Length: 125
Image (cartoon, rainbow, N blue to C red; front, top):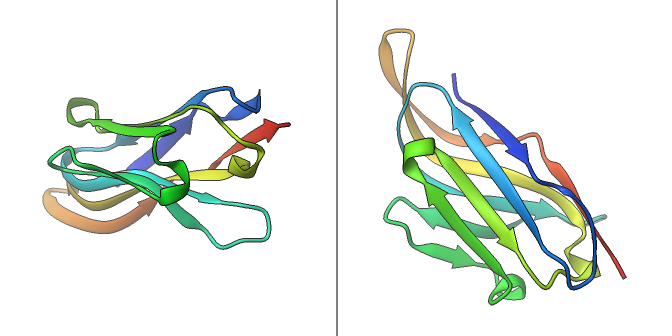
């Protein structure tokens, strides 16, 4: 079993910064992709930023230059540093990991898509 634990949400003023953290627990062998999604009020969930297992980060256009996504493979963790926050960044942010190979119950298993519980980020104007 693999679980994701998120932390770091909260409320800040516009222009401020927050860093979200997400740690995957379990007997993890490897994770192909780690990242963050968000769901704005009344909108569909969207990918914000993600890092592949070679360390390459990708960003949706609206956060480029403001957000930095990184991962620590030794800790099975991904981080989303969010700067110059805007009210339109207000959303529930979700951690997502893809292609998780883990050792559970005496066998190696592969889970394709695991989600965190979500954390609220609110930016006041």
